[in-house]
Length: 503
DNA sequence: CTTTGCGGGCTGA
DNA sequence: TCAGCCCGCAAAG
Image (cartoon, rainbow, N blue to C red):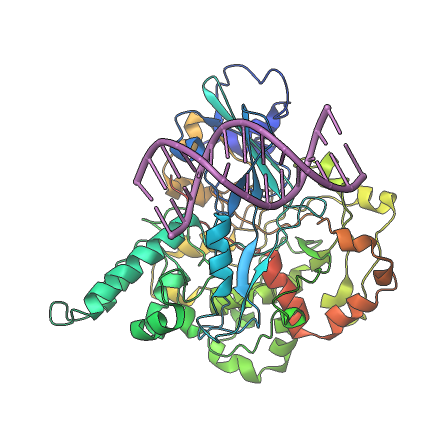
């Protein structure tokens, strides 16, 4: 492999993170010579510097539903996260996924949106607010300065990703096309090709046939509902690595998510869990083929029942993700939590330590651990170990000879927003980039786009609630088993996100 | 109609 | 003073 400057350890930092600046500085770094690649899903206390020519940066786009917030500073655009809209009953969709709608940005539209019902179970919708910034919504700041657009994010999103804007738009347009074809069947023999031809590798679209279009109309009255809201993992290069999201292969799940949130009118605090890949020994290749279980056998698998309670957002990625979860167990996924404010001081590579909750470990009781002493935090580090998943092929990939796709998925073990500065050399063909992300790598490997595994400490205001200090709630969370844990995990986000970001 | 950005104004720390 | 948030307005799609 030719030398790639971005393989340097310190290149793991975004260009924006390499420089010392704050969005509020009187003087920003002048005339940056390098820019970061646009990140659709920034998460954490990150800074990026985009080219002022970057269209998405110009539009201050984000995958997260960010609304404008007045900070009384005309030079700095501030946006805060609206969270995600979910089914209050957390019903499982046909494919096992859950609704994760994009909150309408406009207040009025959002109120209308919340008055609607889940298209799947007709129960109420619930807005899960973002509280990832010391109890407040995550905020994003944009500042145009010279030839650069400076971006700074504060806080870690403590909820699943909503549909991205592009996904929402794609779904709506697809829905409209489907409607057109549905009511004009004589002109179009089948609407399937319409769905299949959709560019967006989204569960929303791939599962459209799960419900009849007329049914959708009756249930929703408009086109604002995705059939499944969990964005399907797509690959960094949608053209080369497009994978059909085979959600239909996932039938065996009985995940009772969100069961602690049955009242749609109350936004119950969520346990301060986050997940971090703590892989003390897991750098070796996993014996995956022997571990992977076909989805058809899973419901009868007791081990799987246990694993299922540990897994992270099982719904969207189907059996593929279940295998990842299986791997996660073997490689020490740790739920973590933190306290408000601490992350303020943390930058990439210095994310604070986290407390491990051993509930994923069948040998240990499930306990909510209190905030650890600062010293303990200091001992913890971000793990950027590559975990080998390549033994398993996503069902959608089984028919492909492109094993590179598998390694692409398998290698995605890095924190979301893994900073990747954009140097001219780094803008090569995606294939080359992905090859660089071989699971055989022993060190951190950059990935284009956003891959999310490491979850830094989250900040929750309720963590200071005295009623929680005895861990009772945590017991509830843990011992309610599959439901609560995965429910929160669902809300927390997806560790394996492969967002289709343009290259 | 919705999104987006702007800005006035209020509140609490 | 700062941050968060509510509101209304206007432009744009």
